[in-house]
Image 1 (tube, rainbow, N blue to C red):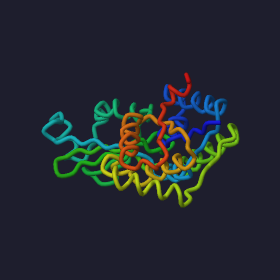
Image 2 (image 1 turned 30 degrees about the vertical axis):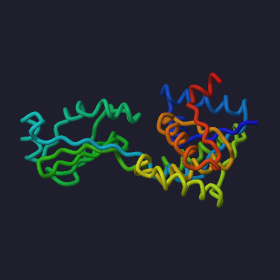
Image 3 (image 1 turned 90 degrees about the vertical axis):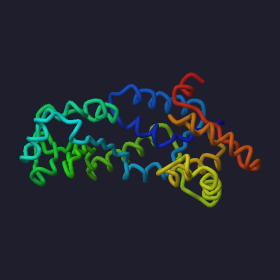
Image 4 (image 1 turned 90 degrees about the horizontal axis):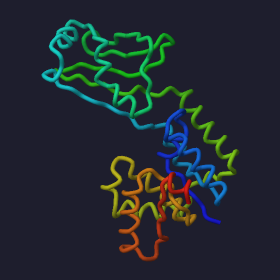
Length: 239
């Protein structure tokens, strides 16, 4: 019976309601439970405490002159939301229907919230540069996501796997050759993949090109390491 280890990016898609990717992730999990065994690395649960954040910056020369004047005088123009509609959509963050502006530092730092004081994004204007970034997630939001992972485990009989010695050994090999490709998430990604290799499981991920490349290279460099099998959620659904 094949095993399927779900990468953190697919689990995050599952946790984000009402999106095309959420439906794909849910269907992939259901398919995996029918075809074999679902594995979730405990590292993925840890990663929910440090979610991806986004940030964009614009120099004053690229801004509408009236915006520069307003920001220099300590006023934040709400028209600035137009700049970030696209990137907020990519990160599944809905724009507030009723904006409230909390001024942290006049002319420098603002937080945009809704009427319930939920933070949507943070804006900073300093040294001629406007920076718009994602908010820090609240503890209750993270804990709710973690609880939903445990509910997923119970629903599909998934196994949450810890990091034993063998996955650590495989992770060290992956880091030795591919830490630059993996970037800032190199350690957590290597541990997750190490867990999958130890279980001889398929890796279900949205980053199939990168991991297929790593799998091919590892097979040539380290012949005795288990072969990494990579599959996307869509491929799993139609398998």
